[in-house]
Length: 439
Ligand code: ADP
Ligand code: ASP
Ligand code: MG
Image (cartoon, rainbow, N blue to C red; front, side, top):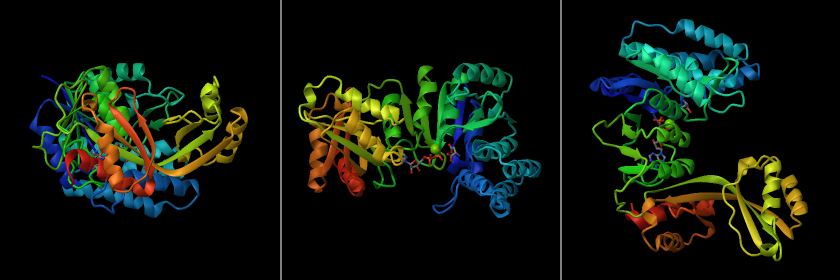
């Protein structure tokens, strides 16, 4: 029998009705043996995710404030699910332990991880599956990076004798035994790691949309579903803001050539999106998708005859390295160089950074402009279609939007456009409209 790993996101496990949908999907195929679960997500748009409630509890405790009310709300979320599912099961002992740990200043990652821990216990009980704690199967190095060797060895051994299991997403253990989480949305990464560890035939990622869409559905009305996308394309879109899938979730499965299928828990008959190593399928729209993010700044350095000065770029980037700032893009002219960085990475060191670049690179001027949004136009079809960039730029210009920066990836399968944050939505809609038709 083949083995499928299925991951259910927060909205897919937000309440008892969603648990029932997830269980029906899991039970529909005996190959769906390993289930990775997120913490309960939003049930409606103003609802609060349990993970966010846990971060709030941690903040209250670290300010030495009372957590009674905040923690009671978390308990109520889980107790509601247990009661509505009609389970003869109590998490009271766990609640007491976690609460005590928060009051005794347990680490932030431990506190946040309890969202998936508790939800996975309920799901395991509801399905009649074994609960396997990620704490004993997913490991980090002491510098916080993922320890693939130890993890795959331990996790494969742990799951070898377990026919059906639920594993909490989002976290693992540090060498000293404390809990560490991946970054937000990290249950996607856990799912990919489990898929790799058990040599799954497929990694199904069940969420609240019918696959990866050509644009963020919160910005473009009814965007088309992408039927097939390569790991590389997905990573570029995910990194730039298509948050349906954590961009780091690609690596474990890509190395083992395990396809990912993004599916909709609320519409299980939809085929969703297949993520594959390589695709020969023609892209009817030229571009595969468009995604973007706000919150970037451009540092512009001017110096006459910069182009002839050997080592200029290294000096500028060396300053960024000293400040621990990573950069996204570096468009250059003959007398100017721009470096695009995330605004949050320089807020605490702006003045010092300007001073150092000025001095070390002997620049004529150094300026920083904030409020930039970056939009990535991504697609393997762009290489063989002339005029893609022109089409996108014309669509943006027709809306009277100024382009602040352009960068084309060297693989010719992505173009990055920088615009003012105020123009972000309109620019993204213009690009989508130019390739797919006005929504
Ligand atoms: P889960 O809780 O299942 O992990 P997420 O909230 O992390 O789900 O991701 C799904 C959401 O991602 C969608 O509801 C949608 O609002 C958002 N999203 C942003 N960009 C895209 C895109 N290009 N395609 C699909 N969903 C997107
Ligand atoms: N619950 C975590 C978060 O909200 C992880 C996840 O949902 O993937 O970020
Ligand atoms: Mg997610």
